[in-house]
Length: 478
Image (cartoon, rainbow, N blue to C red):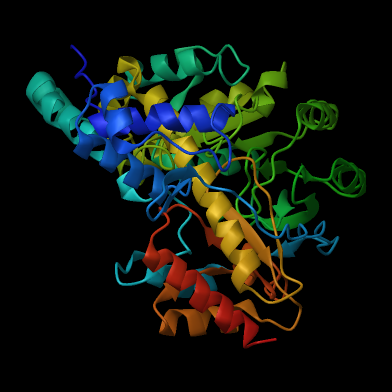
C-alpha cells in the first residue's frame, strides 16, 4: 500500500526555516527579520504567505512586531524562578484511594468552555489530524473486511516493525516479536502490574506520581511506596536502594523521561545504575516512556531498556501524546515477561483496535512522523517557555516552577498557605482547569500547595488572560 504524501502548507515551510535559524542562533534575540517584501522575493512566495508565516512565528512567541519598524526576534527575558525542592514522601508503603478525587477533577477537563490547563496532552491543532483521517479513509478501502476483524495478538505486524526500527533511536535493538500492541500506555502498564504483582504487594513509584499510575495500583489492590525525586533528575537512587534493602518490592514503576507531573529526565548514568540495581535485587522495572519523543534538545533520551541485558525492563509507550490520544494505540516490550503479558492482554481486551494501528503504522512508514515530531517539539518548547514566564509574572512571590527539557508539563510549587484544591475550585468557577497536587500522591494531604500545569495549547490572548486570572486567584490565597 502506497503512503499518502504529507502536504505542508507553504507558510509553515517558510516559518520552519526561520524557526531553525532562530534555534541555531543564526538569528538572535533582537535581530530584525527581513521585510515582508524582501522575504517574499527571497523565498519566492506571495506577500500573504510571508504574513501568515510571521503571524505563526509570533503566536509561538519567537518574534514580535514593532509598529512602523518591522519584525524582530523576541527577547526571552524573565525572572528565573527557583525550582521545586526534592520531594520528601513518607517512607512507608500505603494503600491507595485517589480515584474519587481524580474523577471529580477529571470531569472538567473535557469541557470545551474550560481553559484546559489540567490536561496533559498537546492541543489537537498541533497534531496531524487530517493526515491520520486520510490514512483511515484509505485503509477502509484497501483493507476492506480485514479492518473490522480482531487484530490477532501480538498486534499489527506493520506497526511492530516500525516500533522495532524506532527502537534504535531509543538505544535498543528490539525486534517486532518483542512488542505487543495495547490500548494505550495505560493498558500496557496495567498488564505489566498484573504480570509481576499480586494484591497486597508493594510497588515503588516516583513522588509525586501520575494519578493514572496511582489509580492502577488502587484498582489492583496493591500498595504504593513513594520514593523521593529531584525535579530535574528524577528518582533518588539512594532512597530506592535503601527501600529495596528494607522490604520486598514487587516492581518499580516510573517515567524516566519527562515524568508526569514534574517533567524530570533521568541522566544515562542513573538509568544504568537503576537497571543494575534492580537486576541485582531481581525486581522488574516498568518503564513508562510515553513522553520520550517530546525532547527539546537535539537527542532523544535513551530508555532504561537500552541498558537491560536480562529482560528485566518492561518498556511501555504509546502515540497518545504525539499523534492521536483518542486512537488509544500503545505498546509494551515486556522482556522476560512477554508470554505472561500476552496471555493477560488476551484475557483483558482480546485485541487492540485494528484501523488505528494500521493508520499509525503507515504514517510512521511514510516518514511523516519524524517531520511532525520536529515541528511539535519546537512548538512545545516555546509554549513551555511562555507558560513558565507567565508563572513568574503572575503568581505570588515564593512560587517555584520546574525547568523541563521535554514534555508538555510544568510543576508549580506555591507558598505553603496556598491550597491547590481551593485554587482548583476557584479556577473552575473562572472557567479554568488545573490538576491539583493531592491527586499525585497516595497520601492525599501531600502536595497541597502544588499543582500541575499543562503547556499543550498554543499561546493566545485567551491563554494569557487565563494565566493572569489563575495567578491573581493564587495571590488572593496567600
